[in-house]
Amino acid sequence: MSVLVELSIFPIGQGPSVGTHVARAVEIIRKSGLAHRLGPMGTCIEGEWDEVMAVVGDCYRAMARDCERVYLTLKADARRGRDRGLDKKTASVEEKLKEGEGP
Amino acid sequence: MSVLVELSIFPIGQGPSVGTHVARAVEIIRKSGLAHRLGPMGTCIEGEWDEVMAVVGDCYRAMARDCERVYLTLKADARRGRDRGLDKKTASVEEKLKEGEGP
Amino acid sequence: MSVLVELSIFPIGQGPSVGTHVARAVEIIRKSGLAHRLGPMGTCIEGEWDEVMAVVGDCYRAMARDCERVYLTLKADARRGRDRGLDKKTASVEEKLKEGEGP
Amino acid sequence: MSVLVELSIFPIGQGPSVGTHVARAVEIIRKSGLAHRLGPMGTCIEGEWDEVMAVVGDCYRAMARDCERVYLTLKADARRGRDRGLDKKTASVEEKLKEGEGP
Image (cartoon, rainbow over all chains, first blue to last red):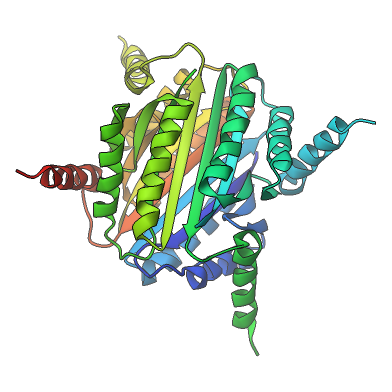
């Protein structure tokens, strides 16, 4: 069962700009080779639970090495028989919106 | 101070497919005229706190009318002097990633 | 339909200790008179959507006045016909755990 | 660095009552021996990242075995040098609230 995870991770106490730390986490996600999509409030990652959570752990450990306090939020949505949810979930909603616009 | 909000809202107890309900919420967000972006795990909305939260309330009420149980998660990030965060936050991370690739 | 909301709100960029800011938000929640419970990772508030979200807005505005950047996460669970969910939800799970221990 | 994690996990599509599934997850958390606290909107667990996330994974796998769709949200707060955050975080806020009440 593949899972879609959205991860937001940042340090508390390194000033109001956390982009450099966020970029390092996104770099770790990219290098993992897992399907992912960067968004304004978090990065979505798709894969098997164990492989996605291993990457989340790598992001956490990298930030915890440098920062006194780390905060993260994560949402996961797992559905049997679904693949390519990263594309299909938004496509399905877009489709429904078009249908609703009627003739 | 403008705020970026990511909203995920769905019914519990209407079966495993919740896309129709989600599409209705996204429709409400679209009609609000606020800047927004649909993602695989939620929709980001940008604006002043009161106007964004009014739209969140509209999404909630529309779903609560039809569904016995409604669940929602929301993340908000507000930063003084920022505008167009919907575009700039990801652009800034992309930029940092490119710099890091350097020669 | 009454709603249970869990709110976590804190500033980013005011150093790693955010307890003073959190206490001010909890003070606002207490003064609202709404049923609530302080937890290690957030405060749960119960009431009608409009009254709970008005308190959340008060917490946000108070923090945004003093802090350059404010982050908040919120989960809401609304269920028809439920009241006193703040007590009943945990009591129901505790009850199920006891049954499971059976002879 | 010890971490405080709040986990909410439930199935989508098994009807509006999810208490039995939640109780099973809480049972797994209890049996782990890690410090934890049950709340109305999630269960807080404290420990080292690897041990806490192993328990989260056990909860996920147990639910994914029986349910077509599983949703979970997780917040983590890790702070260097903190122990017993499960008790100390709320105690610190309560303390600040009392001070604020003054003579």
